[in-house]
Length: 228
Figure (cartoon, helix red, strand yellow):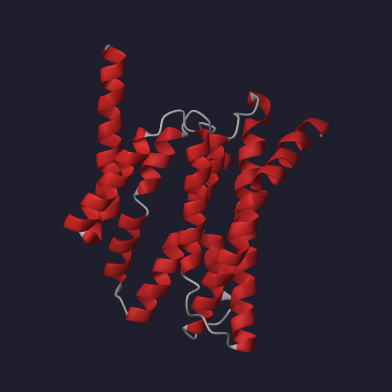
């Protein structure tokens, strides 16, 4: 028991910055969701079974626009395609089988991925408890935020204008944290050029195209380095 307290305690400490982002961000989603006229309980329910901040914000826009099921499916698939690359890069850290693996796959958000890849890798015996606790804590913060925002909107009918910017602000903070841990900075320039170029040429698909270009560029560079 004592052995298992250390990874959980460490996960709690490491997840505190995410709590400061997820609770207000989740509240913004809950507020926007309830502002559409849906019952407030559906917001935390979405956080429990979907747990995808950007996709949930996208869902708000799709619902407001009256989008169909096919449009929602394609838009969500494109938006969350980046998680394919996230998953490949953490395969060696997560368990190879069991319920823990499935939950960690489900809960691999941008913020959790940022912590998993920037924090020191735990000892083998503590690895699964740490990652499960980290993911569960982050999801609990998101559920709490969604619950607070939706319930407050249902009670007080707050002005929801501008709340969607909370997601952009959180991504900026995560980018700055990643920059502090990087040994080289040129991949950031590659990402910036790829993002701006693909957005100018193909706005609706720029995220997947930009990620593909970045991964291809890094792959070529690492292959050339290995050969050299």
